[in-house]
Length: 82
Image 1: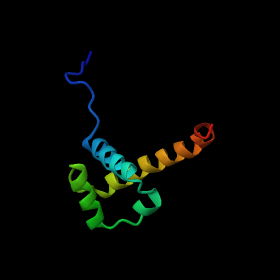
Image 2 (image 1 turned 60 degrees about the vertical axis):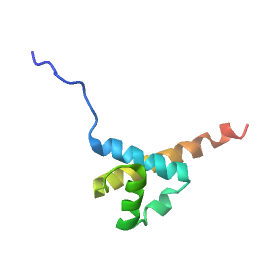
Image 3 (image 1 turned 120 degrees about the vertical axis):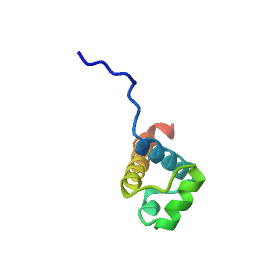
């Protein structure tokens, strides 16, 4: 039997994307605006979030996380207005 010596730790990409998505969300920056961000803007965002400049894969994951949050807010809007 093989036993793990370390508990599972998510890849750094997930943590970096989460930090970036948190910052974008807190600033109220919509995913539509994020889609058009250039490399310099991503680098500035990364600096503000305290992470390295994101790869294309990390940018895609960040955008996916942000879109998911927006989708959840839309779905919960009827509940939030009561």
